Image 1: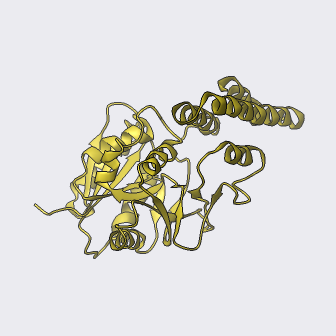
Image 2: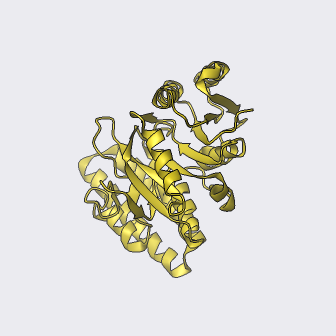
Image 3: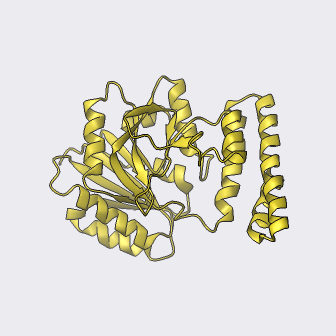
Length: 296
């Protein structure tokens, strides 16, 4: 039996065509590589034909793909934990199903990690939007000032909270759309917190990693298109999940006083966006932030 170097774990939910494009881009990118790899494809009980597509795709051995089906939608974090348990590689690449691999990006990311594995514990690639513009995916941990800047000062837009460096750089955390690490590190941390269904999983994981002395780096020479929110059901759901994620993260890692201030920031953001929606007659803002206000 061939020893596997790299296990690429992909979790999908109702993204049949997008997932197929992702899988094809992986194998195209790694064509002729010396890296012994496998793709662990986990479907979160889709009902759009993904199951049949993945089964057929996995039957062709040249696709390096193993297909695993969950009986229910486990969410992003638990779905990845499910996949990593079935991975046989020393290294694992957690990759979103809504990504497209450009050129030899996985190979570049993997080789850079292996060459520097005494220094690097977790490594992220440079994510790009569909039009190939940079997608901010290197981030600062969500301290209260960072959350305030992100929600009320357009911190992401101005690079205060999320950014896309052009140099190899140590950062607090990277987008969960693409994270390379050793399977041993992932297992040491217990994987993603199973209590987080979607959004904030990678922040929590890499925050816990830092507390154990494990660092995170950003590698811009590996470029990957990330379409974003392909599995999310509507525009309201992601916002509400971010609110829930902030609250869960602070209950888990911060003091009651910090949590109290967080509630105030979230309420301020929700109230501001709600009233802007009222003034402009924007039903999306009214519906979304009316619900968000109730959460916090």
